[in-house]
Image (cartoon, rainbow, N blue to C red; front, side, top):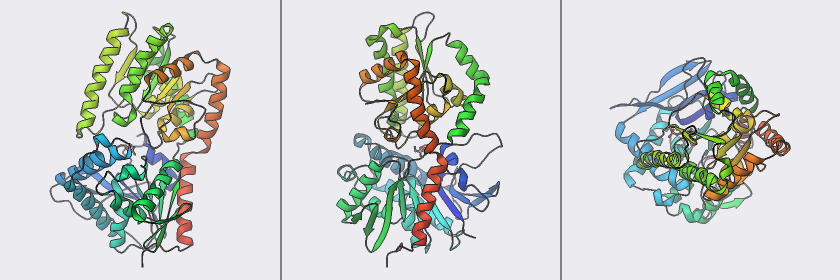
Length: 464
Ligand code: F6P
């Protein structure tokens, strides 16, 4: 039987019936049918990891995971994936740290993944790997003798050649991406940047979406990821009865709610957003006492120095803004470093008058789409969206801002707060139509169709 094998660093093994699903699980839901295998890291570290994956079966899907050694995990995840690739791919060269030892660990985890998965693979399988942790995985799996179709989707942005050149192993990474048959990007800009890198750094021949290197062809295309728009919309409607959502709504006492929800990551533009919120009260003092900004940002990747520094910075900025603008009966900024259940977030988006999505750089940003899907048609909120989120390519009816410009964000907030209902509704209808069209289901189907059509055309996938 032809099976689909999903490979990603983290494996979302369903824990309980009611557990809420992450973005990747939602995006790949149509593939989670009996026979599918999802392979990756177990989340555990051990002194002597076995090559034989541990297996959990849930609703017919096989979840197969392996442990990693603590030292290799550090170099792979903390070092190369999140200390080198993450800042580079988010245009933060100044934060990029490169150590050859980390790259070696990154390669050895990819090799381990390939060796371990090989023990489970059948010749007819189709493999789909996800994200920047697994760039060299196709090459390693080919070395293990796998000949089936191999696809990859990059959830984060890609960079132009002039930037990739800063990475000492940048050419190797591009060559490794070329070892896949199909590579998907969030936007056409990212796909084009990758093809430019292949052409300029490796001398590959590019024709449209096709890249030819060393006698084999691969396709690099844009396949924007989406959400389960209908499901999220219904979740938001149900969440109006969530006790926490009701408490928050009650605590607003008629004031407008501006909401931001982000992993605590320096790519999300949080200090700039906080700064902009202060500017709102300087530039448009009529909004003092009239708005609450709730920022939810669960802590993330705290083993990486930059993330710890960000937390300290946000604590400081929260104190500064509240110290400066608070009144005895009004606290302008509510900031929480804890995660919230998906259903609560859906309900909070629904009562939000402004959704603040202002990353400095982002692959797509699904919060933008979730905020839109959660709104009511009768009294919709306004999305303030960074021009550097992949979502801005599609969601052009949002208030698009430059996230490096606090005054522009403040003015967009002002615009959102005074926007008449007819304009809010008109913008919302246009956004909603897009979010309900480019869904998770459409993303997944497009990728699988493209991957399987490469297989059907038997385009030379493995170099002679
Ligand atoms: O945005 C990229 C991404 O890999 C997401 O797919 C994921 O939700 C997030 O980062 C979490 O990162 P980590 O696995 O490092 O906690």
